[in-house]
Image 1 (tube, rainbow, N blue to C red):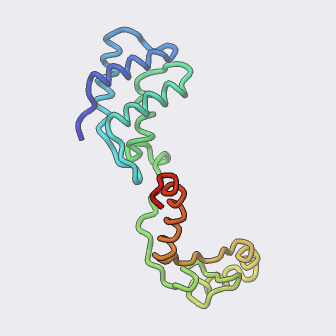
Image 2: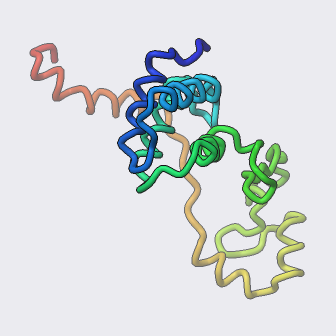
Image 3: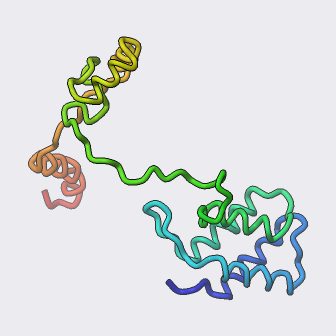
Length: 174
């Protein structure tokens, strides 16, 4: 990914001067622009790709919309780190990563332990019955949802035709 352009960084740093107490001196604006270029290198968070420009724009917008008064550059850096560098935060501020999901052992209950308001016959169901008895079944009956059905390719085609039919009629194609 290409670095954040200094021209954009200067423009964004200048927009921070709309925050009460933020220095309007050219040296301070240049220093903030250099910070933006240094911090904003792009990131992938979850399934979203953040370009350096996206990061810088988010950071400046977030500061302008949430800060009533400028405090210091360190607080701007903290705001950036909360969003884009969670591993750099103190342990109590880090996002919990549960790791890789283990494979499902019971395809009847999908390792939930209950099916249709009854305990499953698998290991999980037996353990839950031993641990919770009938207390959990009352909750399971309230919370059980029907399993989704598999949609066939023919049904998808039919739905697409119904969706596109009005548009095609307007164009005089159908």
